[in-house]
Amino acid sequence: MSLRSRVGLCALLVAVGGCLMPARGTPVFVDLRAGTFWSGKGMLLEVSPDKTRCKVAVRDRALIVTSIWVDCRWVHERNAR
Image 1 (cartoon, rainbow, N blue to C red):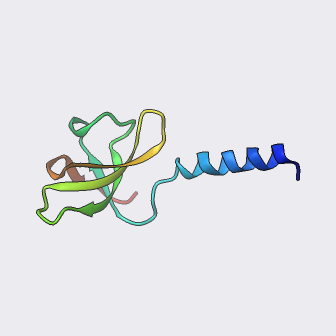
Image 2: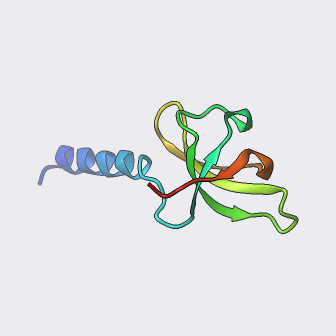
């Protein structure tokens, strides 16, 4: 395998890794008032000890999955469909 092929394969794996939602977590809907997302469908990853901030994974406008902390009042239950 040539160096160019290896670099291309590594770039592809990194790009795909940023596009997959995490398997762990609870399916939620994040209200768009909490930020600018491509879709409000996300995964709840963590809740702060005082239960006011929630860490969620959502897709940004570039379709890359990012993990951010938002106010929990903007995070709502969603069916896992």
